[in-house]
Image (cartoon, rainbow over all chains, first blue to last red; front, side):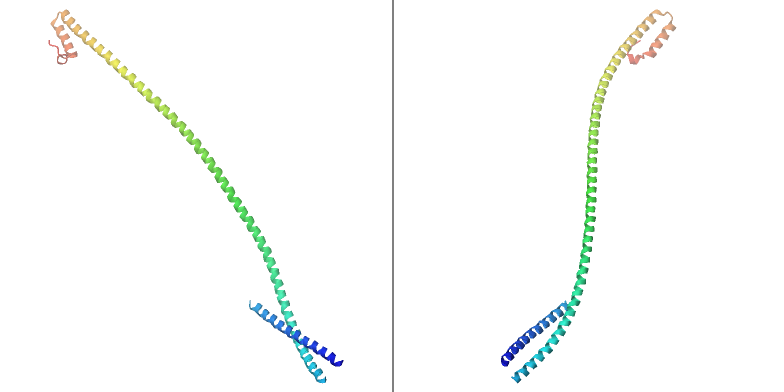
Length: 40
Length: 181
């Protein structure tokens, strides 16, 4: 039972990591766009 | 299980750090966005003001242009009316000039006719005067010749005869008349 809960938590952590990576990639993209905007 | 929990703990800690980083980035981005948003609002406000000013200028230019066109239209109308008036005046002058020329031609014809009539009349007058003069001269010469003969035949004294002959010689020189004593 405890193992089962642990796997569930592990899956949620994995999903959170993916979302965080995606968010960081998005932030870098926005920063690049802003840099381009400043140059223009 | 213990190891799995520790590994998960490490991953969660790493996630927490990344989340803090994301929050910082988000905050910085939000500030940048707010700054850009404010600048954009200022630009939009200025654009609206310029647009209103441009519209006002456009309206003013339109009114000035319309007034200018109307002014030109009025000038053209005035010039056209003046041209019509001048054309009418010229037509009237030409008509008067034609009438004057016709009157002068008529007068000239009348004068020529009168001159011709006067000339013919004068010729006839001079012919008549010449005819009458010839008759008068003939009568005078005949009369004088007769008077000479009568005087010579009727006077007794030689002195008187000579006097008559001298008068006759004076009036009718012998060479001109061709008479012999």
